[in-house]
Length: 182
Image: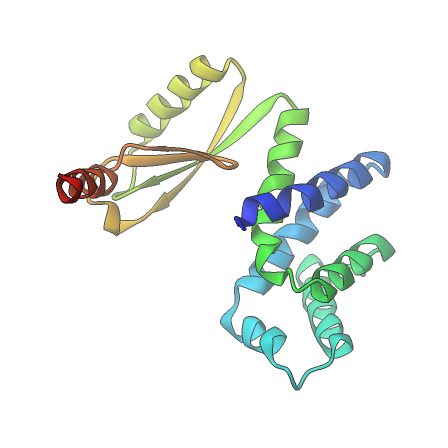
C-alpha cells in the first residue's frame, strides 16, 4: 500500500484535532520533528529492534521530539506516538507530515509544491515556476526546492500525491519501456 494512502487518514484526523484546539503550528512543529527523528537510520534501527519494548521506543521518540521542539508533548501528541508505534507506522510519519501540511495549505487557500531538479534553480527559474503554478491553480503558491542529480535535466513537481514529471530521466525510462514492448 502506498504511504500517502496510509498517511491521509492520520493527517486528516490530526488536522481536525489541531483545528479544534487551535494548535496547528504546534502540530506542524511536532510532525516536522517526528519526521526528522524517524528518518534517522539509528532511530529506524532502534524501532526495528525486537529486543526493545514499545515503552522504550515510546520513551525515546517522545524525549527526542520534546528536545527538538523545546517543550513537553501534549497528551494528544503522546497518544499519536503510541498509536504510530503500536500500528508499526513509524515509516509513514514523513508522509503524514506532508499530508498535514497539504491540509493546512488547502484550508489557508494556498498550495505547497516540491520542485525537484537536477541542478539548483536560479531565482528567475523559481519565480517563473511560482508564477506558472499560481496562474494555473489560481491561489497562493509556496515552492520548496530539492536537487536530485539522477534526473540529468528537467524537473519533477509534486503536490501531495500528485506528480508532474518532466525530467529527462522519466522520458528516457518511458522510451526504454516503449522500445522493450515493441
